[in-house]
Length: 603
Image (cartoon, rainbow, N blue to C red):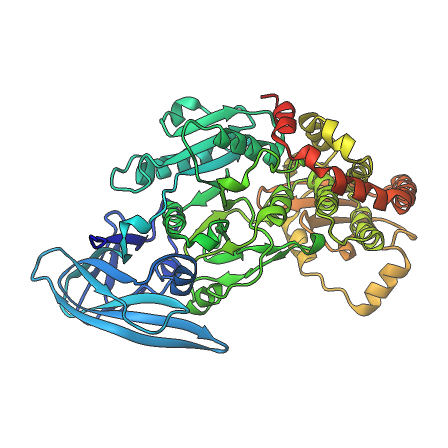
């Protein structure tokens, strides 16, 4: 029998900061001494005794996860350099309150003025945390150009993988054009990439605003779609992927307003080609990092907790080694959001499509339904604008309604008393912050849930969304509002700290509304404290990101009307809530089928 020929499989490229996506240097490397990085040409020059280390978020190697989930049995690093160096192989692992740091290999390099690629393998018993490497210059002017982690494996061990990225977009043209240009340059049009002719991008254009002349490419496909929100757009993409002209093995669902690192797509692809048979049904997720503070991790997997969503590993400063090593610990996740989520195509049966709930919660329910395992690896991520920068009054209709639908179809234990308690807290927060439109939308969303699954099947999502938008608050430039905006007053509000005596007085007087309401307040649009509105007769709700706002006014008549509607709806839910939930759970298959979705989408 002929012996299998071993081949070097590139697992992960060493990447640099770039003005195209991220300039936060400490996510890529740490430099010590006289080290210069040249952005335009993407290479590093080190003077004698200078050192550069790659135990970072993007350039460390998650050895524990690669050995657990893939077929690889060995790992090495290849570097392209010119000059005289000491190359050190490193192992890092977080252990309770300390970091285990070991040098597990070393090699001296002298290229004698030539640009050469040097290979060295890790040969160590350590296999749980992160592999990395550092190079120390032994001569002025030594250069580091590029590198990658590799494995020597039989080519036959690789699984054939054909990827499709599915994007749902609604009037986010600038993000689409930028990401398509970058992905095109590095993957679609790069003959040296393994994804060349092996990656397609399917875009659901919910807004009908994309300029197709800017997206002309044989591997970019745009589908004009009804504006049925994220669930409608992503489901359209899934349906098109199922009937694509070539077999697609995996899809990556990706938001339209993210900043993407193309290397994340390559690393996803490589993981998929080497997955062990028992892990073929795994999701591969991408963490969400912030676009403003690009080192800040917002979420890496999540737990639904019946609607009290917990974002896992939130708040990590990925510039630090400790945070990167904390990411190496695996914790139970229930779903991964669709800003970057890889799903095997064999899970997408004709009777297993997402729910038609427009926006917020479709990814949650689909993950709860299908995800048995989530693989998260440092360096697979997107940058996304923080959610607190996106105020949308319409969410008061969707979020609670969809929480109820998700829990009902999955038969999760969200009992009537707990629901009413959560409903009461959210409702009265909006009432006592004078945001009556939000309170009405919240009531309408719950009332629509109580209409049952037939209502959900037959409603026109596009028309309903338009109604919701019209009945919510609309942000305007502050110079167009009647209430004068004062930034010092806004800052003063943010610095307010309520004493216990003030809190007691406020609660006894229903936030002061039993007395005189004469104050004008300027408050943040995102989660303003009720205390800001004590004795308030009117409020300017200010969005620091867009520099826009909206006005609200105290109305005793409106509060009474809302109170009556609330009591009526609570009585209705006390009587019918359990019955409605059981109906959703029993008949859920009716809204998950391809037949339903084709009719709903009009395709």
